[in-house]
Length: 381
Image 1 (cartoon, one colour):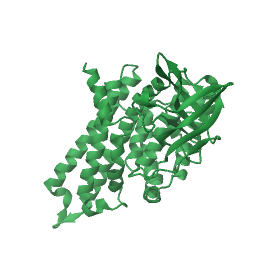
Image 2 (image 1 turned 135 degrees about the vertical axis):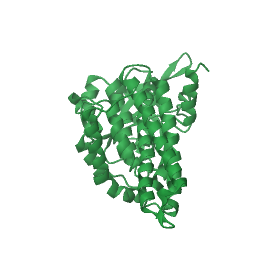
Image 3 (image 1 turned 180 degrees about the horizontal axis):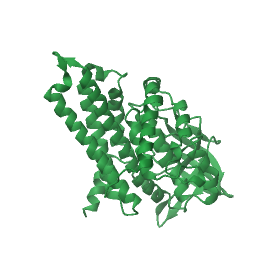
Image 4 (image 1 turned 45 degrees about the vertical axis):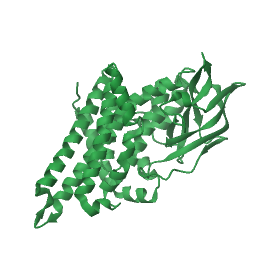
C-alpha cells in the first residue's frame, strides 16, 4: 500500500516549504544558540492552521488527516527539528488524546484552543523509573470528595513549560486491580496550584524545543478531568504512540532529506583542486547513499500511514518506519557533516544542528530497541 499526494496535499507541502524557508530558516540558528522557544514562529504556524491539520473543522481544525500532518512535519524538519517536534508533540501528544478519548464537553472546551495554536498541550508519561514500563509508574491520583489529588513527577515532557502551555495530561496510578496498578489519564489545566515545570533541560539538541521535568504536589483537579475510561490511561497512550511513530518517522525523513539538500548545495559550491567537490566520486557515492536512505524512509512512513488511514492494523509498519527513518536521519547527519568538513562542525550550519538533533529520534517515542521488539513480536518471537 502506498499514498500519492493529492493536489491539495501537494499545495500544502509547497506552502509549508515556503513557510519553512521564509519564516523558520532565518531564525533557527538564533533560537538554537540561545536555547529559546520560537514563539513568533509558533504563532504563525497557528495562523497557518498547522496545529489543526488532522482535526475536524467543528473543533477549529483544518479537516485533514494524520498523513496531512506528516507532510507538514517532513517539510519543517528539513530545516528545524525543534520547530517540527513542537508541532508533532502539540498535535499528537497534546491534542490527539483529547480528540480520541475526551467527552464532547472536554472536546468543546479544549480542542478549539489547541487546534488554533493559541494554546499548547502536553502529555506526561515518562518518569525516572517508568516509560515503556508502565509498572514503574509512581505518580498517584486519589479521588477525594469529587476531585483528583495528584502527587508525583514526570520527566522529558515536551511543550510542558511554555508561556502558552494550558493543558498537561498525565498518567497516574488511580488504584489497583488484581494486584496490578490501575493507570488512568487525567487532565491538568495549567497553571495550577502545586504544579511545577522544573527548569528547562540543558540538551544536546532540539535546543529550541521546550522540555521540562514536572512535579505535582497535591495538585487538585475535578473528577471530570479524567480522560477516557478509568484504568485505561496507559492503553490509550499506547495507541497514541503507534500513530506518533508515523509522525516521528515523517519528521526523521525530513531531517534525512534536509541533510541531502544542504549537502548537494554545498557540494556544488565548494571547490577543491579546481572543481566542485560534488564531482568527486567519493562525494557522489556518499550523497547517493544519503538520498537512498531518505527515499526509503519516506516510502516506509507513507506505507504505514496508508494502512492507518485504511483502518487496517499498522503497529508493525509504524515501528518499521520509525526505526528506518530515525536511523536514516542519524546516518545522513553524520555523512552531511563529513561532506561539509570543518564547516559542518560549526553551529551556524544546518547540518551541525541535524547532527546534534537527530540522535533523539532513535530514543524518543520508543527507542530503536523497542521498535525491534515490536517488529520481532509480529514474527511470532
